[in-house]
Length: 376
Length: 236
Image (cartoon, rainbow over all chains, first blue to last red; front, side):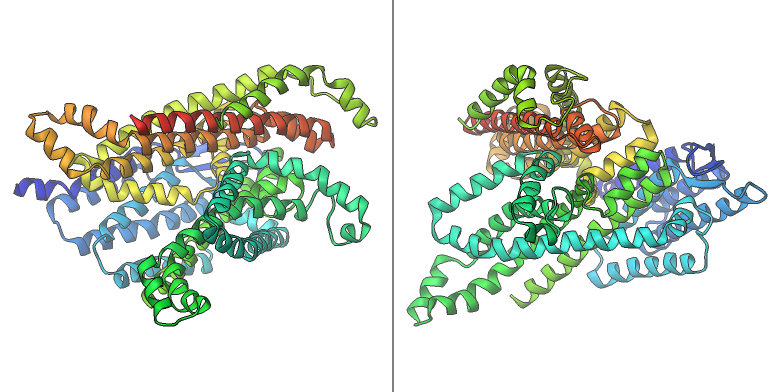
């Protein structure tokens, strides 16, 4: 039994260290003559990295101190990007000014493995310690970035070259997603409340939206171009508001259609969160329907709704990237334009920004959810 | 029932669209090429389905085996990590997965296939873990009491009881794959998204409508069929 206890928590370490160890032999960096050509693989620190992964696994096996493991893995999460930046600077020494050093599959796999390992070792600690560790790591990476440690990596160079366009695209993406969320809430909440009261009609409504949800996003976006172009021609006033065939209007319309199903579903579940007995008791005490809603159903249902909004927000940020194919702009433009030009750095810049935005939405709604749960 | 109507529409579209050139010409007389002709609609539909089927198959095998390993006694400690990967993976938009696959594999069907597999594993994995976790302990004890071995208990008790949620995961995986394969035509895969993307780039609304109608009918048909199969499995 004791051997089992000792072995069981070691398995994730073994699997993740094997992954990191194997990734040592994937290219850590690529050196390309310019931003359009593909590069030559370079892995300057194979042995050091291999030893580091073995050391982490060995430490976890022989000295089973959680604090030590967390310290080691945190150091690794910070050191990997630093190493990439440092190597990029050395590889660019004396190279042509158009040269680019891109981070390769080896770097990304190792970073992912280290991050997951840290997540595993932090499990079981209190929320305060976990948050503090991640905050410290974010601070360390951020201060390295401020100090210019990553200045020679290709994505950072791409960002510097396209800073204005990128920031515009970023805010367009945020605006598209934000408008969609607000509209979906404004329509979905009353509609959900109605669907909750009228159970049968509500079922039909949910069926219609789940039908729509199945249609591939690109097809729905594209099919809306025609009707919107017709609207703009029929009512020029709408055209002046930006309702052309392509652009933001059909994109937001389609995004709202996709967002409505989860909003409706979670509104109904949220209103069901207060047990019928509790509602009846409150009514018996002389509370009006609005009182029951405001005092009992909303506080109990809010956490459910917020966990649903988390899904909606993440989904919307991802789908808004597809909307750039019908001319809505946003970060998807970086991705598809980059793919068209064969500019990998541009694609990666857009992709990483989209993932970061989705992640930020996820964290934001997780935080709100935790807050609502405490108050409920 | 929900499968039959979309399926009829899909078959009708496949029969009618190849001969619908004059209609589209009458509708949009300014277009010089009112009908997508680079690849036949049948070939596009089969390519799309083939890509989605192969990717969903691989994703199902991967997701199912990972889910089973993570719920066995020896692999339990992996469960939190597997869950974390599934949760973090879901925040990656399909477009992002597609975009990451392109620098690794170049243009064409290969990056789309990789993206479909990577993204398709998550729902199957999540539902497998959820389904196996929800098997009532009483059923497990009964199987143990009857002297079932580990394998027999897994194959004859746990998996049949978890079949409903697992099937729901496979269905979700297939539907997401159909949508992502459509976008995959933007990175050079030949799917039903090709007419849409070419129509958007070349300003040809007829291509866009033809591709969108077909892929919409295809998605609804597959969803209906898999949904019917899921209900059948749950009733067993």
